[in-house]
Figure 1 (cartoon, helix red, strand yellow):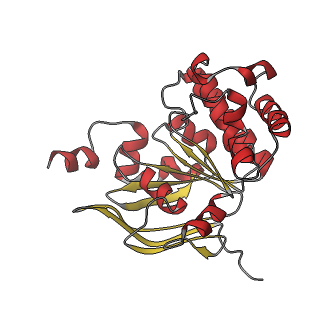
Figure 2 (cartoon, rainbow, N blue to C red):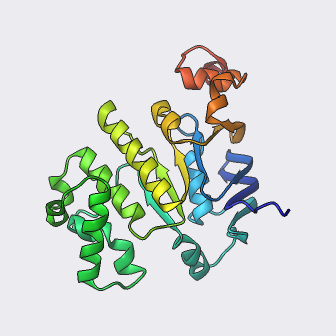
Figure 3 (spheres, rainbow, N blue to C red):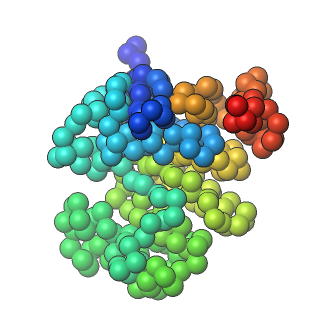
Length: 258
């Protein structure tokens, strides 16, 4: 029986900014339909990793494939075609202030797929309902929404075109614990409904435990531990143990002090 190729594969990926090696030989396979959460401290390269997969940043060396296609070095039209498979929930929701909520949600359908405005409005209302927002929210402006509602609208936009892959960038940042849990539940529900492959970057361990099938910890440019969420509390890795328990003392602090 042939082994199924991963949806996303990274091999020996290196990315530098000047003298700083942000990614220093990253290897990772992400299966179709799997939810992988990448953890690590601020500045550890989590966002850079996602941007390299999307072709926004180009690694100095290494290979990144999506559905078996090499994306490193892809031209603009080709990378747009690959990114049409991808939805994204940004850290700050990143809604367009000059567009009403429904146009934010349907932005991909309007721009990339050329959907007519009536159909796009109906799609937006339907998608908003899936993240627990009423139809009347569609006509509001982003500035009229609370932080939690903005995150829901951002999630609706990420899933509206039913992407095969969804990236979640710090999905619970700035939310109170209850709203954060609501967003985590919505992410799980939306990803399962679509059968999508999910990659989340976060330092919120409550999110990690709810969203992840597998966890990968990025530290000093390398993935120092990758394993099922069920194994994270018995990783045996002092860096992982310090991070997931939020301890000030440990090898990460010692490295920072040097």
